[in-house]
Image (cartoon, rainbow over all chains, first blue to last red; front, side, top):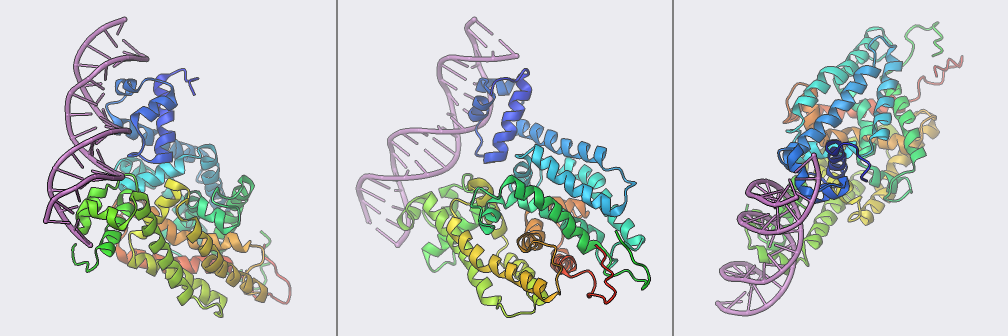
Length: 216
Length: 216
DNA sequence: GTCTATACGGGGATAGAC
DNA sequence: GTCTATCCCCGTATAGAC
């Protein structure tokens, strides 16, 4: 793992991997150095201390999600299509950064989001807000049922793929794939399922008018 | 925290609390002893070592969930009512054992369920299986839509309350309650919401109309 | 910028007294 | 059953050579 042209980035990558895999506390400076292919003392040249390095890792990971989300989720979409895209974005982002779900979850349960409060506030003001607005718009036009709280509905929507990432070993056992988790194909299909599930929950129960034969 | 009549149980309680709060690695034998109000060396009298203690903690926690679930979820229920009860059970169990969600999640992401494989297999064969059967029964009677995979639908159903427990600090920020998480009342209402959401997703779109007005 | 060497504290585990 | 005392390893962080 030494092909890093830039030591700083190599350290950041190694730290992200290990923080995600073993958690902040259990990850040693020495292990990060080995993984990055540099000397342990060098970490203290680029970062103030272990916490500072951790903070930089979180900044980059959350920042990446937010930037990507803002770029991909234009707000003038059909509500159904927008909900689908949110879930697709989740699945694709986690697919390309397989260690980040654990990184995020660990920050939540280890530190109560203390190191990510700023990024989460930004996430709340951008992606989460946009998902809520999309749901509200669907409700306003009558496409979505109005008896659901948009915020809670947004959380339910997002929870499916998020939970899959966290509970993968348990889900693997549940579906007979063992503790290594379900196969990649199963996971991909789960994203489609999650979108169908959420949309089925969101859609208004029946086309209110008797004569309106809505096909899609 | 010394009202424990039995030292062993007191140690188990203290260990569960700290393993859930800080994780296996970051929890020290000495801290457990302090929390339990006993001497550190005493832990080695009741348990072989730190791992053995951890294993006993997991055994008790998972076992409790399974026993309770088996007791409360009789299989001859109306499918809709059964789905509601599953979510209610989740919420009530986590309400009464607030540290166990973190304990479970940590075992999943820290050890890939290695210390809980047996209990999870049992959980798969009892509670999870029963939820799948309930969904299948709903599909067979036409109450539930047939285009959903029962296993995935079961996971989506369960994910909502589970994810709330894990992502509480983030969700708190999202809904404007801050990183301490949403208020207890909000959390209670979320369980109701989750049941409505899941049932709305599961229910067949329209009561099999004579004119076959399928909105797909 | 990158390395070697080391100070320093903390945690798991055991011996053995009571 | 419960405690005191202690061994030994390991991890963070710094000093300072190159």
